[in-house]
Length: 379
Ligand code: HCA
Image 1 (cartoon, rainbow, N blue to C red):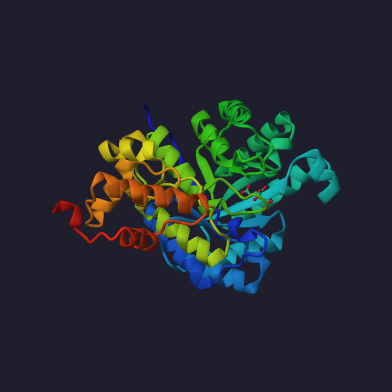
Image 2 (cartoon, rainbow, N blue to C red):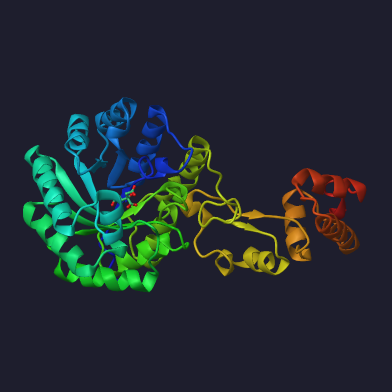
């Protein structure tokens, strides 16, 4: 398969920080930026400098880290926002403006033409200062396609490096995304970016579909944090690109630790069943599964935990089977006979059905109850 032609712009430090209640310190943003860069992320959206003086200082400090990644920041079509971005020394400005009739009417009270004129003049202004521009249509997914095409065409003619399609309210489905990206890229003169929100749970799927259809720059956030239901998850998109898009240049082994870092800094807890980085991503309880995994991990692990810095765990509970239990006991130095295994297994199931977690300490006390000593079954 020909690898997808893509790059990642991670927006954790900007859209991720717009998650209600989240605010990163300068040091936290620097730690996250460093790890993103270690993974090989091409572009880091470091913030929205016009939000505050501290935010501006932080964006500048990330620029000064001199990472191999390019640094970008958000800007409205407002000259003072662009001036703040210029002061930070970023490589790329994401110049965004709403394009749907709904947003134009409610937010700007402008016609399409008035909006486009303003956006183009701010684009020219930014380019005049030697900074690359991503020409970003907010609420693009609810914007008339012909107007979008006109806007992107004019942006490209003025010198925008990218055209950007934001599914701001997460209303797209993967098939629609594929079709619209196909249509747009067939006419575009510069690369297309996609920025997907997760209001129907499709953000990562839509991002992957867009990449499959020819979108170049994919926007992500770590753990999928972001406004409302969040954005496309960096970890999900990168694993999908590796497994199904033939893209193998990113160092995914940092994903688990980066996820934990962002969980701590953001205070937003990752669900146990979250793809790639959830606590259960590589945890197995079912006896049927564990018996097969012992023979060949590929039976129930699509990609190896080590690939993303995770590790396989076998969990004891109601669904445990003999083989799995024997395996776990052996790893602790116990090799009981068949009757003892049955006793321990029954006790585990009874406790689990009473909603008790079977931690290693609980298992050790069950073993003690059954009056076994390490190695006893070997005698
Ligand atoms: C926002 C803007 C944006 C778009 C950013 C972009 C969105 O609402 O904060 O296109 O790069 O979701 O529409 O994040």
